[in-house]
Image 1 (cartoon, helix red, strand yellow):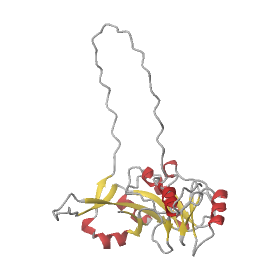
Image 2 (cartoon, one colour; image 1 turned 30 degrees about the vertical axis):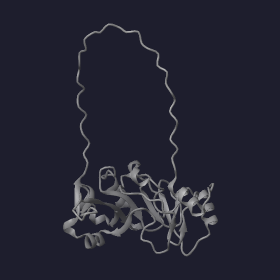
Image 3 (cartoon, helix red, strand yellow; image 1 turned 120 degrees about the vertical axis):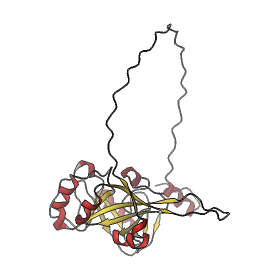
Length: 252
């Protein structure tokens, strides 16, 4: 289990020096003896309003998302104008609205059972748009939730991904992680159970060691015949699951 918890700008200083958060959950073997505790991860989403965007941009310049527990940003409404997102945060900034902006992913809320063809056409026209809310079937060309399958890990959000393609209206999250407020995490996990790693610090490169090798008699190099490796076929688990539902291969 992984949780993405929302905080505000006033909380940034409190978490800026922390790496990923987690709690340890007791596990038991089949014979009821206690096993190795399991880690459940905690990462943060910095939520801001339209009026806080200028302060947000200043804060982002001081945060490195690859080292901080703060992994993503969510702006809660459309902007009056485009803003410049720091390069380290591109792909991590989301906006809950309807307009499209450079270097920002728009999360458009739908309701009920939307027309997937209309969503497909909208996503084709606006590639930075993704959908949440409503009852959604996650198929090729209709991006659902914050990230595609497997992509969240590229942004440092760890946890077990899944191949779920059907999402019901009312879910708190349309990704493999739960989305809560930080106060809800404190209440459900218990403040005393929330642990943090220190923010990862870049290590200074070590000076290379100079080794003096003894001269050896030259050998006639043998000609090696390399056998080309077959490329691994990456299986899209969600497409595979979709095909299994209908008991046949479905092409997208």
